[in-house]
Image (tube, rainbow, N blue to C red):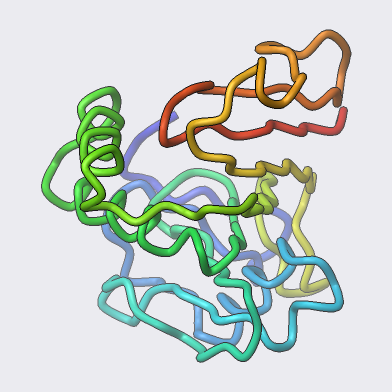
Length: 195
């Protein structure tokens, strides 16, 4: 549900998800604490973290020393969602943010990146690169945990197909890996464990 009201959950210390530009941007420390929860535990301390300054501008909150880039929850969206991805995916992710800032999304965004990837303008990883996504209803600063937490994993394998991987193009059972967008720049293995 989109609106102008902020949704408060759990306690007054729970980070709100706001539907208009928020003046209640969580502190850098809170954003970092939430973002790195999406990463494998042994990679959290050295991951780069991107998030929001007090004006809502997207910035680097913490430099990193390993292969992961973590993105803090967007306070202007309902619920909680943080992601960490392999640094090889940074050109792809950055280009997506640039196009969205220009008002391009959906199929138009997909088509633009597809064209750029095929032409070589957009650098795509040449090896499998993982994205870890952690979502939930809110982030509680009381427990420093995500409420109703659920993980999803994506392994980008650009231009791969069902034939080249042996993966089905849709899941046959809950949590089973499958390939989405096969044959495109955004080909990826989806792994969504059951809730």
